Length: 394
Ligand code: APR
Ligand code: PHB
Image (tube, rainbow, N blue to C red):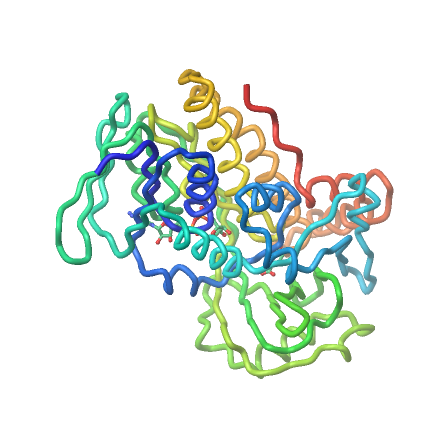
C-alpha cells in the first residue's frame, strides 16, 4: 500500500490527525493494535481546552460535543477547611473549558473516519517503522489474518501511546528521556450518579487528595489518591465512598450521591517527556512522546497540541510545497509541552502529600493560599488550566 502519511495508533491523537489530514486531501492510513471497542473502553478524562475544541471543529466532528459537552467557566480547590473558586473565564480573559469524555470524542472521530473513504486497519501486530531518516520510509505489520503488509509513505505519525513502537524506533543515543515518578496513584470510580457540584472540585485533606468530576449531568467521576501498594480489588464501592466522604469538606459532604461503580481503576502518576519528538520523517505525537499526571487535566489536550502542529506542518509541506517545514515540529511541540508538564507537576505538588517534611507541607499550604487567594495567582492557574495559546507554524 502507498499513502502520504502512515499513522500508527487509533487513539485520540491518531484519529484527530487522520481526520484533519483527510479533510485537507492529504492521504493517510491508520493502523491500530487493538479493536475499536478496546480503544473505546479506555476511561480517560475529558476536560478540553478551547484549542482542542477548535481542532475538533476544524475536523468537522463538533456536532455532538456542541450539544452534549458541558461548558465550564471555573472550578474549585478545597484545602484547609475552605473551598475557593478559580474563575477561569474572568482570569483567563474570557476562555472556558468543555467537559466531554475522551471516550465520546474518540467515538465521534471513529464515526467520522468510518463515514470517510480513509483506511483504518485494526488488530494489527508486529508493527515496524523502516528508514525513518529517508524520504521514503515504510511501515510493516501483520494483519489479524496473519498477512504481512507494507505501507510505503512520505511521513510516519507515531500516535501509538506510551507503550508504542514509535518512540523506541528512535535510537537510544539519539533521544533523551526525562521522567519523574510520584509515589501515588489515583483510584478512580465512574458512577451513574449526579455530580456533587456543577463544577469540578479538586481538594486536599488530612487523609489525602480528592477530585470530584463528571462526564455529564447524570454520570460522575471521582478520585482519591492512594499509595502504589494499593490494589483496586481491595477497594469495595463502600470503602471508596466512605474514603471520599472522609476527605470532602464538611460543607459539601452531604451533597454526595453514591451508587454502584461502573468502572474502578488505579492509575499511577508520572511525568515524562522524550526529546526530540521527531527522527527524520517520523513524528512522535501525544502519549508516544509525553505523559503528565492527571492533576492538570492536560493528557488529551497535549495530544491535540501536537496534532495541531503536525497538521499545520503537513499543510505547509503538501499545499505550499515547503518540505523544510518539518524541521520545526519538535521545537514547536516541546515549547508548549514543557509548560504544560510544569503546570501538571505544580498542581500535583500543591494538592498531594508527597513528603512528611513539615517545611514542604507548610510551603504547600502557603502556595495554595497565595495562588487561590490573589488575582495574580488566580491568573496563573486560569491561564494554564484553559490552555496556553498555540504558536504559529512558519
Ligand atoms: N501498533 C499499532 N497501534 C499501537 C501500537 C502498535 N505497536 N502500540 C500502541 N498502539 C495503539 C494503542 O492501542 C492505542 O489505541 O496506539 C493508541 C495510542 O492511544 P493513546 O494511548 O490513547 O494515546 P494518544 O492517542 O496520544 O492519546 C492521549 O489518551 O491515554 C490517554 O491520557 C491520555 O488523554 C490522553 C490521550
Ligand atoms: C476526569 O474527569 O476524569 C478528570 C478531570 C480533571 C482532571 C483529571 C481527571 O484533572
